[in-house]
Length: 260
Image 1 (cartoon, rainbow, N blue to C red):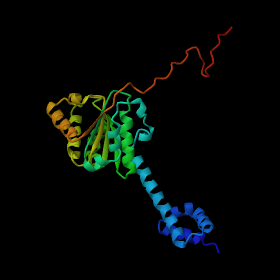
Image 2: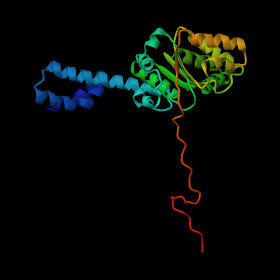
Image 3: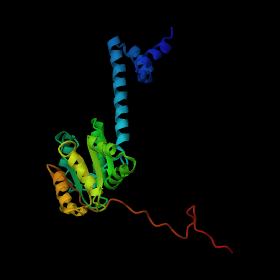
Image 4: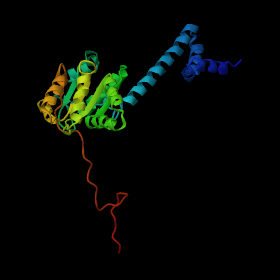
């Protein structure tokens, strides 16, 4: 008697339809290995838990909006021999999130600051934290747009609520009103509550120069650096320009011939 249709219905009613993905394989395994009923059920339950955890991770990664799939496994540490690896691996435990400590990453363009920031965010997602990644410019534009449609408070709350907020390229553009005030309010709201990872091309002692208001600069930078982990990435840019194309070549790469 084929009970699969009835079992499928019951599993869907219990919201356990994912078990159907491995049911046939586990059933064959139970027969071949003479598993007990309890062992068979344990295998199915483990598959369902793994499936749900993977689905949650996929959702967290999608919400994080990382620019690309940057991980610590894919970072070229050999190209950055002076980098503080011990600190990075310590940060990868996500203890800084529980400690509510910020992570500040500085260095010239192309040395891997964004890669490291997103890699730490990826680790945080795998550990179950809600992460949000944006460029500083995009984040401020997103907040300012909320003034036009009345959604400012909701947008601001979303930025403050995330377990970990990653702001890339701080100081790339000068902060003008009301962006400087928005940035300060966000930092103040998250201070000692939820940590931030910030990357910047500016040295730490230059961060105040990003503000037009010295008082806002002092108050904001002071909160950012309070009990923060500071990471300096040195070296030449790892970005390689494309080789120039041959102007005498055609679309297919072959040299064009003059008409006779």
